[in-house]
Image: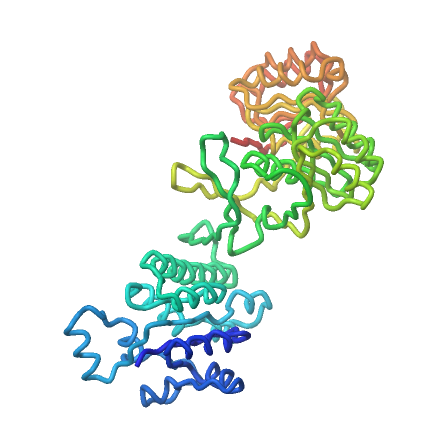
Length: 504
């Protein structure tokens, strides 16, 4: 006699497959809950407790954990000694195992008490999965009920292959690993363990294939984090060509910038660096300022907004080529206008909450870093008059933006908009030269934000020559005094923040 063991939490539609397995000659073996469900459809199921001659124990905590059950899964069908032991001990021949797990993840989101939550940590199901996957040559494991359709069809035609069995086993091990990783991370969160002091276990599921990686000769796909909704899981793809690897990176950078602000914000990103950012109350003006910050670089970039796009703004966007537009929403008229451009992607994002940390690849190892959330310790004026309220607001705007500019980084800002950005230079004065070159005449009466200290006073002299009147930097150089004296000499307002904002 051959058995199909069915023990599932989500029982809907399982009756259809149980009937088909019966027709293929399998006896159904199950726990009490599943057996009662199948019985309502006139499908007979042998109770595990009758087979093992042991009732469920401890309020159902122990149901399947028995040598007869695991022996029926684990004995090797091509081993004569195993077969003999199975016969001598009345071990059932379990050829199919269909199992899902207690919904720990779903229940944990309700923030129930620990004792109640722990009742949803599956023990028997996990053990059934591991045993079946281990003996994949003899046992067909189903952990994804969507696989039942094609598996049964192949059984009907007697063409289920060893490769099919391997694939099902792999899914089982993934199910077990991801389930345990979610429990681990939930308990770290609940019990207030410091994530930086603990070993980390994350699991990811495949999202979708990408056309290619950073370059056309590189394979790539997108993986979704199982433990929280990452950026890509919050995106709704509304229109356009497939998203590329670089599209996703740049879209993440662009939206991360505008999410920093409560006011209406626009960010245009090119090659993972902002080329224009602005905030304000008027949507059209905000976009125009961001675009005019570096209109040349904006071509083919990614543009992000933290508000709903309307008809008028969409018409302006259509005057230029952007690879991706990402916003919180779009009016119906706006979408119709934006869809006139076939070679762009339109994304809507909702309910995205940035994690408190980020990970960076280190050739297979990972760097774990807390998010850069602290703008400054204090705004200490070392040269010139005290800051006005508006200057403080401008500085806060600039510091929020510079966190997303590759170091060495310099921002020139005016009227809550970038007017020049120098990014990714090997020397700070070169970053300043690039920012001034981008700004042109707009550098006059602008505010300079530097992600790190100035090692020499030459940058102060260059800023003075180009009409920059206020400089903001963290301080901390051994030549701070020389920099301060140079600022005083040129009557430039100099502010130290005490916080560096490198982005590598």
